[in-house]
Length: 435
Image (cartoon, rainbow, N blue to C red; front, side, top):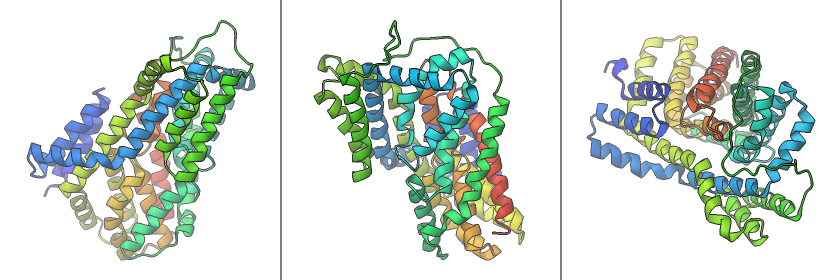
């Protein structure tokens, strides 16, 4: 088969083009999935059935995001986010670099120290938009800070989400003939996480100039005549609800249960009035519901991609072209990883797809165990920061676009994709030769 007519390759290219043309991400995913299925010989009905049946793969993630959206809306309704934004504003005092650094650190902590992933974004970012507008801070720089913090820690460090990521790499490498302990994976992955700092600094430099935004109202946010700095009982109840979300999540390893517990605490503590709950819930679904649906369809898209057999064809064709060149083999793995992850939208979900194909190639080419781990991690992570269906991009957009002035594709996916995928690929291609 002509590699240019590979169903996975064509589907991902069409997905990217549709998104760049500002076609809705959800529709773009559906059309691209159907195209991949038809090109591989499926009829439309079979392809749609595979997609629908595969959507359950992200069902926990989707319900988590919807519940977190409701929780974020409820917290905004109490006014606590206004207090938090005022305190951050006093600390920052108009210094753009300080704010960008704080947001990057908070995002890092969301992966390893307090593993709540993107849950903090719709709570923390919308109240800060007014301050960012006054500073004329380019939100693309903020998107870079958030994407860096959501991605670099789990690549580099074996804690929180990093432990899950490294465990998947070790598990699927062993399943395909190369043993490596989960505790050793970080020795091969930390350089590619560290390389993302280059992309972050370059992003801050590129987007350092002022950019003007309008001060538009944000749904669900309380605007007060005088800044509220005093913590009332309702605010302490809200903080306790946030603590319960974290505690339940860590204890049960269930983010949906944690988010639901936080909502219940706010209702029982009368931080949420029952008469207002429907409006709060509707606003929460507006905040995060779309992301939940995108993640569901992305899981279905991944199943269609697997069913086409196109990834295997890509690897086979690429291996035939690279011959015995280790450097070309590494480049081939990065390209295939980028294609697959942009479509699937999750580096975690990409690992099982590519490990089966890449591990034998690494063994044949003579890559060390750590070199193989580095290539798989980089190939899986590539595209995550630029995929329209990734929570690494959807999360920042959910906060930065709260007032409708931040474009998901051009202001999040394109900048973060170029700035972070480039150093990751270069680092992995070069260092894997000597690891």
